[in-house]
Image (cartoon, rainbow, N blue to C red; front, side, top):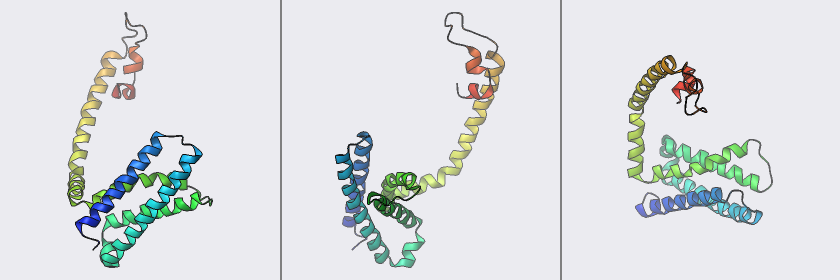
Length: 181
């Protein structure tokens, strides 16, 4: 029952709704106390739904199979942070939880565990990371070569004759400023 397409689409839809709720809250920032109260109730409902969904997932796949999948561990961490943030809403202050609450926005990543097509894309990107790092290293090396040449050629030019606020040293005087120019 849990692994059916219908239940996975429902879970994906609720994840999207939760993500849209987070977007709306960030757009309304800072929110009034009335909106904050409604948001806390909605967040508690989402957390309850995701907690039940995680329990169904664990029991449907038996705990051994469930614990082998790293995406399920990610789900457990996000749900645990959400449950801890509910304690903060109730008045118990948990130190450092404010930073961890930012991870609740990562629930959208749970879509990758629900929709096989998205999961294939993420797995392919994961396999492509080494090649992308090599390409990034090549770009940084080429950029560094041009930054060295820019310091050599343009650092001592001084002010621009027609644009006095342009000082070549501030843009090309050091390697780091030339690298980011």
